[in-house]
Length: 241
Image (cartoon, rainbow, N blue to C red):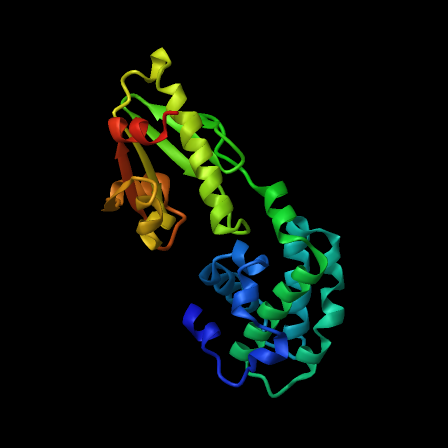
């Protein structure tokens, strides 16, 4: 399904101003492409097949996205009229054109970094914030790391914030309740996709999680999930200042 939308022929990227280098600093960085594809495809497929289907799709897109992006998206139908009028576009090409036009529209009307900062969340409950993007949970001998959305941050900024969070965490190891901790772990789709990223912070990749863990904690994730860890001694040697 996802590949169908991405590979639709006949849509010229220039028509919608697609620029992969620029997209790294825009709203496209906040959304995994496969998730965007699935959202647009499902929204479109659930509408009845008639002459108004494409117009209804645009309205449904606006209605469903306005709680997240604000009332500014109510103006999106006004900028998509040319695509709606292009009857030569097949459904796959139409969805691709709308998706890219939608993110271009967001780029022009919202600041992606400000938006991510306002909507960024860390795990609540047992997870304790270390900084804006990093939090942790403690379970006996294990500390679990949660990395919040940081797609709009530049690589150097992300590295600085993660290092800052780890240094703050290292100081907590001196507290009585953390004396038994033996390792720090992180489990995420990010580990599966870019294991080398966490390896630069001293973590060892453990590979995919087993199915029981997946069903308990990641049942809504459709892609691969992997885990990584760093032993207590290695972590403290690296991050305790």
